Image 1 (tube, one colour):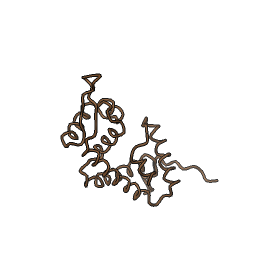
Image 2: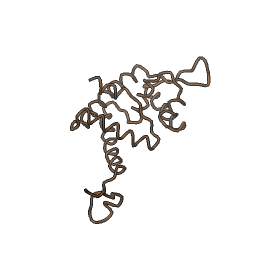
Image 3: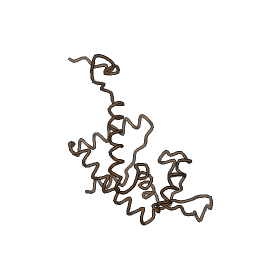
Image 4: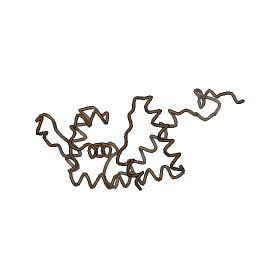
Length: 168
C-alpha cells in the first residue's frame, strides 16, 4: 500500500512539482480570468461589468445596495461601477415609488442587447474551456471547486450563463 504524500513542501526544493489545490485553482483562475477579459473585449465589457449586468438582469428592480451585497462589492466601488454602466447607457437607476431614498437598477435596451451578446461569448468560452471534459466531468469539477469555495464562505447560484450552457 502506498503511503500518503505530504505535498505541503513540494516545489520548495528538489525540483518537485508543487501539487496543491490552492496553487492550481489560483493559477487556473488567473489564466481563465485573463482570457475572459479578452473574450469580452468585442462587447466592450470588463468581467466585473459583465457580472454586474448579469446580476442586475436576474434581479431587475432590486436596489443598488442589495446587488452590491450579493456581489460582495463595497458600496463606494458599486457606485462607481453603476455610474460607469449608466454613463454608457447600459444600466439605469430609477427611483423606487415606495422609498424615495432607494434607487432600483434596470438594464436598458442597449444593456440587454450587450448582455445577450456577452452571454453568447461567455457560453462559447465555457465550451472551449471544457472541451476536454465530458458533461459529467464538467459537473463534477464545478461541484468540487464550489465545495472548496464554500469552505472560503463563497456562495454560488445559477446564472444566465449556466442556463445558456445547459440549454444549448
